[in-house]
Each structure stands twice: as structure tokens, then as C-alpha cells.
Image (cartoon, rainbow, N blue to C red; front, side):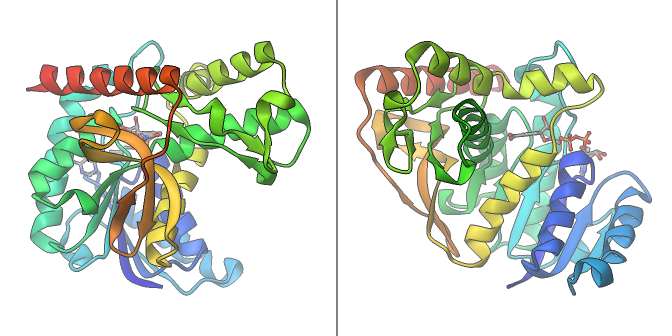
Length: 308
Ligand SMILES: NC(=O)c1ccc[n+]([C@@H]2O[C@H](COP(=O)([O-])OP(=O)(O)OC[C@H]3O[C@@H](n4cnc5c(N)ncnc54)[C@H](O)[C@@H]3O)[C@@H](O)[C@H]2O)c1
């Protein structure tokens, strides 16, 4: 168990993540931080009071400052504004960059040894902002996107084949957005290549739906974006860190030549443990997948350049 995990942004993703962290007893204290007065305090107190029913002892604290988060081992950064209908993730870039920069500076001040799990969009660019502003090494700045995109992909595959999601192994790489790269060549159902079980047309439709998974939910909700699956995905990353599980999960990391890509955050398979990023797993891709991964990384780079 960790001593302290802080979640910055007490909106839909952040508050739900805080509750999941407490419910899983991943930390002795969960600190929920937001700029809105009363919101993190009220949500944290409400969650704390669910402890006797849910069976957790985690203290959940809400605050508008960072002092309560001093020494936290992990920060989950969800601060920012969410996507509205018709708005691309990239439209969010300037506003959220300012927010994430100020958050990362505070993290550096109160918890210089922390691991940062970035959730705010546009994800890959916000990871870069967080790494720059915190000055942390790449091992301690990770982005959550691939775990969510993979969960969406696995959900639709399980539904289409009427099998347990537990038996679907898959991985979605690349930047978070329309250019994400589902690895069909590594998608198996209890070890059976998915291409033996689903015809190409169905598989293409599923890949497409996973790619637009976020937009589909934005279209339905109209006043916000997905948060149940995103918070679960962020918490799975924290769990891998907290329990030093050495899980291989697709995370956005600062690439330094791996996969032939340099100086950009992009989703690749990584080993996640107590030190954060412990290894980038370099797997063989088909020519088509490699091309798509490079295109995805270049899309992230162009947003980075646009931000300056
Ligand atoms: N990476 C992913 O896969 C993924 C998935 C879902 C959502 N997101 C992103 O996560 C972010 C949060 O989404 P949400 O649905 O929770 O939004 P939300 O609007 O419900 O919550 C965002 C919260 O951040 C707070 N905030 C704003 N500025 C802040 C600051 N400087 N310090 C602390 N808190 C601040 C707001 O007051 C608000 O409570 C968005 O950027 C969204 O696009 C990413």
C-alpha cells in the first residue's frame, strides 16, 4: 500500500479515480485537489464516509492547495477542461497546457520524488508539459490512454464474440486520439489469434468503434466526456505502481529512439512497477502497424509544435 496518492482535478474523472483508489485500499491517504472551493472537500468527505460500508480505511482529504499532498508517491493529474461535443482533443491544448504546467510545478514543490500519471487531454502533449514543468525524468511521467483505448477495444471484441473480456488479450498503441493503433496482430482470445475467430469486416468495424470510443460517449452525454472507464484505467496504472506488479501496459511515455521515434510522448507497451516506467518493451510490428505508429507520433508532435 502507498502512503499517499493525490488526484488533481476533482471533476468526473478525478473524483471517480479517488473513490476507486480508496475502494481498492491502494493508499493510506488519498488527497483530492481542485481549484473550486468546497468541491474537493465535499466530494472527499462524502467518499470518506463510504469507507465503513465499502470496507476501506483510506483517509480521503479534499483541498484547494498542495500542502496536504506533500510527499505523495503518485499524482494522478486530471485537471483541465473536458471535451465538449464537436470539440477535438486538440482544441483543448492551450487551456489545459497552462493548467497542467501549474499543477506540475506544484507537484515538483511538494513531492519531488513522485510519479505523475497524466490523464488530462490532449494526453500526449500534456505529458510533455508535465515532464517539462516538473523536471522529472521520463521514468516518472506516464500518460494514461492506451489502457483505456485497449479496454474499449477488448469490450467490443468480447461483445462481438460473446466471450469473457478476461480472455481477450490486446494492446492499443500510439497517441490518444483518432490516430491510435490497435494491434490486431497481437490480439488473441485465450491465445487464439482473433483473425481466426472474427471476419475482417467485423474486426475493422470494432477497431473503428474503439478509435471513436471517446467521441461516441461525448455525443451521448452532450455535457461532458467519459469518466468511468478512464478513471478505472488510471487506477489500474496506479495499482501496478503501488504493488510493484511489473505489469506490461500500453502507456504514453517519452520515446528516445524506441520504435524509431524520438522526443515525443507516444503510447507503447511498458513495464510498470514501483519506480514507474521500468522498461519499454520493443515488440515487432507489421509494416502497416509501424507506419501507423509513426504517423500517430507525428500527429502528437505537430500538436506539440503548435503549442510551442
Ligand atoms: N487520457 C484519457 O484517456 C482521458 C479520458 C477521459 C478524460 N480525459 C481528460 O481528463 C480531463 C478531466 O476530465 P473530466 O471529465 O474529469 O473533466 P471535469 O471538467 O469533470 O473535471 C476537471 C476538473 O479540473 C479542475 N481544474 C481546472 N483547473 C484546475 C487547476 N488548475 N488545478 C486543479 N484542478 C483544476 C476543474 O475545476 C474540474 O473540477 C479532461 O482534460 C479530459 O479531456 C482524458
